[in-house]
Image (cartoon, rainbow over all chains, first blue to last red; front, side, top):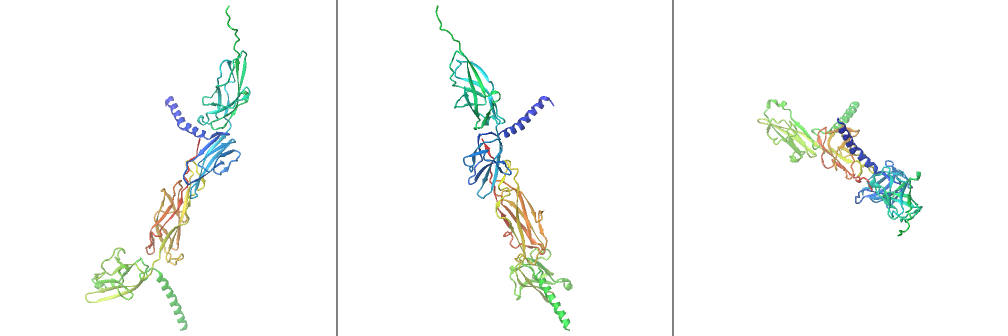
Length: 233
Length: 277
């Protein structure tokens, strides 16, 4: 068999088999502190009850310290805030007017391994560059599909002062500042940007990598030359 | 002499009891209603007159003609073909009679040669045949066996449910009849939501077609096993057909009245899979 044909067949198998599996399994990953919605289709007259367990067959109830059901647990949909890493199953019991019921479950894996850091730790600009600045981030989603992760909110400080409003970062992974209020000066200065925290699309904690100071980006703002006024001799 | 009289008395008592017990059986002189029996004279006895003419009739105990509906003359050759003419029929040395109504009757045959006639009679006491087979569900309406169970998204762990029916024969309207003939029936099991079922009897015997219950056994249990479904009632109906006892081939007298039973198997919710954002 022609090698090219063989490669094509292998790629086709990967696309048909591996990609769908990957897509399915990714749905189970969520971050600590994230809030996700779980729902089923309503049937009029039936009642519903949601629980979180660690074993769907034994219905071993998860510790209430590991999750929080936000709002009512007796509707066709429920919001759950995940508070501790681990494997869980969200289960719903639907009961009809005859008293017959079944349970459905969805597998959830709460992770804390998504990370964020600066790709470049230093940069140089003239102090009259203006108020905007853009630098790239390195983000590891740990298996969470991009569409269920982005946009994220990045909280930071400038020269040690936290900024209340986070910056929204998309799949492009660029951290874009638009109002840094740089004042042109004649001497070199340093601007320290520190990532304090980050949240994914559903409020899940993205771990800020601290090792090696990769959460800190130092901008060197060069002083502009001191030029005397132009005189006419 | 006294000893002889005592022995004679005991003999008579035993004989009487035997006759009494025998009288309870379904015979030509003590038939059950609904049964067919043959009556004939020995043609060979009068073989010289092979072209004699016979007239058969059924009379009441007072020898008045019995009502037409209480019996029917059938061809003795097959026991099923109706005989339309039993009067003045040449060489009609035997007939079959289907007894329809309890009562005391006389079967009479008149044989006539060219000039003279002779009449023979036999007394017949028809008793009600209480042979009856009923079927009833053993369980009340309930959810299927997956009630309260965790069902995986592709429903592949749905189990099966069994429901049982008690099939009972009586011959005298009581649960402890003295006459316990072999009996048989066919059956048809249907599920309200369609699908197939497995039917077994008593010890798990899988029977297709006619089920035969041995003499002396009054009940049998039908077990129906079927796949569970979501979102639809799966009521099970078991109907018996072609019911009869095989000793005299008496059919069930009230077919379709108590020969069918239904047990409700309530639907489980057709819960969708859980989706998340």
